[in-house]
Image (cartoon, rainbow, N blue to C red):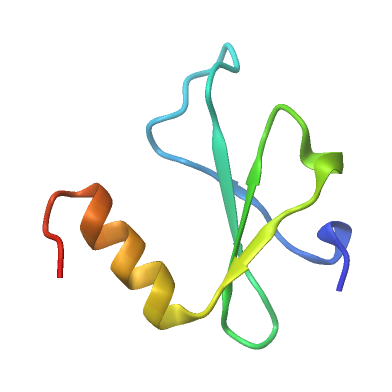
Length: 64
């Protein structure tokens, strides 16, 4: 799988001028891929659904 095979979405917290942006995409297997929008060619990190959910909960302050 390459990053061009995925449909990337920017974080809803990103602004139009760039800044610190995270992009996410759902892989064909249902995992979540993450990358830095400023350097998409640097690659991405893929997380299984359970780990993506845990990360979102931790970021939101609802740690497990």
